[in-house]
Image 1 (tube, one colour):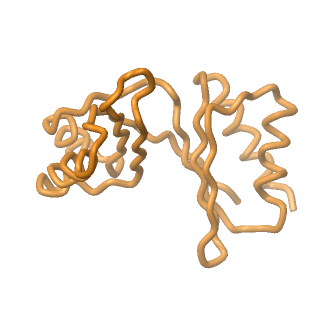
Image 2 (spheres, one colour):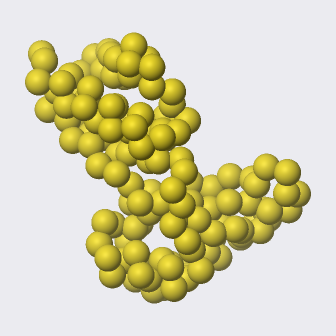
Image 3 (tube, one colour):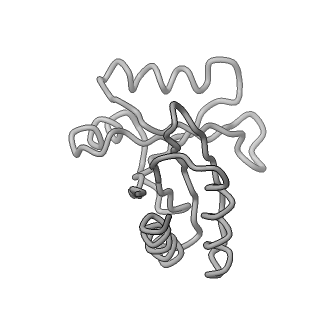
Length: 143
Protein backbone atom coordinates (compact mmCIF):
# COMPACT_ATOMS: atom_id res chain seq x y z
CA UNK A 1 0.00 0.00 0.00
CA UNK A 2 1.32 3.43 -0.98
CA UNK A 3 0.43 6.94 0.12
CA UNK A 4 0.99 10.00 -2.06
CA UNK A 5 0.67 13.64 -1.00
CA UNK A 6 1.15 17.03 -2.66
CA UNK A 7 4.02 18.97 -1.10
CA UNK A 8 3.39 22.73 -1.00
CA UNK A 9 6.76 24.25 -1.87
CA UNK A 10 7.95 27.73 -0.94
CA UNK A 11 10.97 29.57 -2.37
CA UNK A 12 13.37 32.25 -1.24
CA UNK A 13 16.65 33.41 -2.76
CA UNK A 14 19.85 32.84 -0.80
CA UNK A 15 23.40 34.05 -1.15
CA UNK A 16 25.62 31.39 -2.71
CA UNK A 17 28.22 31.49 0.05
CA UNK A 18 28.84 29.70 3.35
CA UNK A 19 25.90 30.40 5.61
CA UNK A 20 23.53 31.58 2.86
CA UNK A 21 21.15 28.66 3.27
CA UNK A 22 21.76 28.35 7.01
CA UNK A 23 20.67 31.95 7.61
CA UNK A 24 17.29 31.35 5.98
CA UNK A 25 16.77 27.98 7.71
CA UNK A 26 17.72 29.47 11.09
CA UNK A 27 15.04 32.16 10.68
CA UNK A 28 12.44 29.48 9.98
CA UNK A 29 13.54 27.42 12.98
CA UNK A 30 13.40 30.45 15.27
CA UNK A 31 9.86 31.15 14.01
CA UNK A 32 8.89 27.60 15.03
CA UNK A 33 8.50 26.15 11.54
CA UNK A 34 8.79 22.35 11.25
CA UNK A 35 10.07 21.54 7.75
CA UNK A 36 9.50 18.28 5.92
CA UNK A 37 11.26 19.23 2.67
CA UNK A 38 14.38 21.30 1.99
CA UNK A 39 16.21 21.70 -1.32
CA UNK A 40 18.95 24.18 -2.03
CA UNK A 41 20.78 24.80 -5.29
CA UNK A 42 22.73 27.45 -7.16
CA UNK A 43 20.58 29.82 -9.17
CA UNK A 44 21.12 29.16 -12.85
CA UNK A 45 22.53 32.22 -14.62
CA UNK A 46 22.81 34.26 -11.41
CA UNK A 47 26.38 34.14 -10.07
CA UNK A 48 26.51 34.49 -6.29
CA UNK A 49 22.85 33.57 -5.86
CA UNK A 50 21.08 30.39 -4.85
CA UNK A 51 17.54 29.08 -4.52
CA UNK A 52 16.11 27.58 -1.36
CA UNK A 53 12.92 25.53 -1.58
CA UNK A 54 11.16 24.38 1.59
CA UNK A 55 7.90 22.82 2.65
CA UNK A 56 6.57 23.05 6.17
CA UNK A 57 4.35 20.43 7.75
CA UNK A 58 1.03 20.65 5.95
CA UNK A 59 -0.62 23.04 8.43
CA UNK A 60 -1.92 26.53 7.54
CA UNK A 61 -0.21 28.18 10.53
CA UNK A 62 3.14 26.85 9.28
CA UNK A 63 2.47 28.13 5.75
CA UNK A 64 1.81 31.58 7.22
CA UNK A 65 5.08 31.52 9.18
CA UNK A 66 7.05 30.59 6.05
CA UNK A 67 5.46 33.45 4.11
CA UNK A 68 6.23 35.85 6.95
CA UNK A 69 9.89 34.81 6.70
CA UNK A 70 10.05 36.03 3.09
CA UNK A 71 9.24 32.85 1.17
CA UNK A 72 6.58 32.58 -1.53
CA UNK A 73 4.72 29.50 -2.73
CA UNK A 74 5.76 28.19 -6.13
CA UNK A 75 3.55 26.22 -8.51
CA UNK A 76 6.35 24.56 -10.50
CA UNK A 77 7.66 22.02 -10.26
CA UNK A 78 4.83 20.10 -8.67
CA UNK A 79 6.30 18.00 -5.86
CA UNK A 80 4.59 14.86 -4.61
CA UNK A 81 5.76 12.79 -1.63
CA UNK A 82 5.05 9.08 -1.79
CA UNK A 83 5.76 6.43 0.80
CA UNK A 84 5.09 2.84 1.76
CA UNK A 85 6.61 -0.53 2.54
CA UNK A 86 9.85 -1.20 0.70
CA UNK A 87 10.07 -4.06 -1.78
CA UNK A 88 12.89 -5.16 -4.04
CA UNK A 89 12.68 -3.45 -7.45
CA UNK A 90 10.05 -0.97 -6.32
CA UNK A 91 11.75 2.13 -7.75
CA UNK A 92 12.05 0.49 -11.15
CA UNK A 93 8.44 -0.68 -11.15
CA UNK A 94 7.08 2.74 -10.19
CA UNK A 95 9.15 4.71 -12.70
CA UNK A 96 8.46 2.18 -15.47
CA UNK A 97 4.70 2.56 -14.97
CA UNK A 98 5.06 6.33 -15.09
CA UNK A 99 7.17 6.07 -18.26
CA UNK A 100 4.60 3.83 -19.96
CA UNK A 101 1.94 6.47 -19.16
CA UNK A 102 4.05 9.18 -20.81
CA UNK A 103 4.85 10.98 -17.56
CA UNK A 104 8.03 13.04 -17.68
CA UNK A 105 9.79 13.50 -14.36
CA UNK A 106 11.30 16.87 -13.56
CA UNK A 107 13.22 15.20 -10.73
CA UNK A 108 13.12 12.19 -8.41
CA UNK A 109 14.60 11.23 -5.04
CA UNK A 110 13.86 7.96 -3.24
CA UNK A 111 15.31 6.48 -0.07
CA UNK A 112 14.68 3.55 2.27
CA UNK A 113 14.91 3.47 6.05
CA UNK A 114 13.88 0.61 8.34
CA UNK A 115 11.91 -1.22 5.63
CA UNK A 116 9.94 1.85 4.55
CA UNK A 117 10.57 3.97 1.49
CA UNK A 118 9.88 7.62 0.87
CA UNK A 119 10.16 9.39 -2.45
CA UNK A 120 9.85 12.93 -3.69
CA UNK A 121 8.87 13.22 -7.34
CA UNK A 122 8.89 16.52 -9.21
CA UNK A 123 6.42 16.74 -12.10
CA UNK A 124 6.08 19.31 -14.89
CA UNK A 125 2.27 19.42 -14.81
CA UNK A 126 -0.62 18.77 -12.44
CA UNK A 127 -1.98 16.26 -14.97
CA UNK A 128 1.25 14.25 -14.78
CA UNK A 129 1.18 14.36 -10.97
CA UNK A 130 -2.45 13.18 -10.91
CA UNK A 131 -1.73 10.35 -13.39
CA UNK A 132 1.29 9.32 -11.31
CA UNK A 133 -0.82 9.21 -8.15
CA UNK A 134 -3.43 7.03 -9.85
CA UNK A 135 -0.80 4.62 -11.15
CA UNK A 136 0.85 4.47 -7.73
CA UNK A 137 -2.53 3.62 -6.16
CA UNK A 138 -2.98 0.82 -8.69
CA UNK A 139 0.51 -0.53 -8.02
CA UNK A 140 -0.23 -0.48 -4.29
CA UNK A 141 -3.09 -2.93 -4.75
CA UNK A 142 -0.91 -5.42 -6.66
CA UNK A 143 1.45 -7.87 -5.01
